[in-house]
Length: 276
Image 1 (cartoon, rainbow, N blue to C red):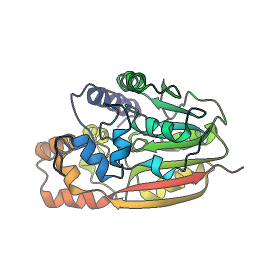
Image 2 (image 1 turned 135 degrees about the vertical axis):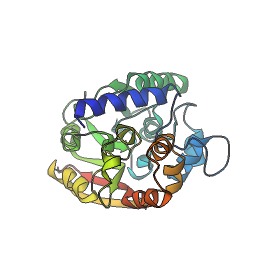
Image 3 (image 1 turned 90 degrees about the vertical axis):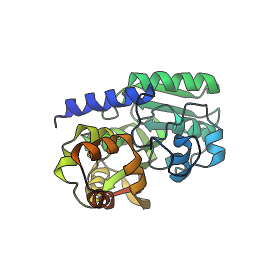
């Protein structure tokens, strides 16, 4: 698939999610019970009740695969950048950590998501959070500007991951750090998924091999690159995800084959440091 076609499809897919016309990585119904699927999925990937209750309503659409803020060791007064900030969940959590003397910048390429995030910031009276429209492989951020970069299940959506990591390295101050939650592969996906635009939007076909992902971070200049946590991708999420469900029904994928795909995908939390 050509990069521009992928970008267009991802942008349109997430515009629908912002308008609540579709879902992506979150299940259409909760696998854990309860009436709020976004909250259920967020709890299952590491967010606490306190965190979810402390952000504006509408900031959590259940789109992540981890909680990068919990591992980023953010401090009062720091400047934080969120790659692919969506409706702002991780930005608001980061803002609570860095306080009024700090600043959080969220970048997203979907206008509808930026609009939603800005509205959430207004509702929550977050004066230390700013949302910018832009691509994370062409960041609208100055050189050596931020102390920390976070991202949650977004870089797998970008075709040119190497450029994303180079841009991330550029905007970080010397000594700055990267903390990412993302999906990677333990083995290659079958072609019917790799070649599917729908699977790209659903956070699957854009994922690359784990070693390739880590090597791309190192090649950008980061040091001390290591995985902090690694968990399997729950088959329940794939089976109840609306995008995956459409693929399964359309292609008549048997459950055993789906389980094999799920075994190929893991969620990782990875960190890296920009040398002083």
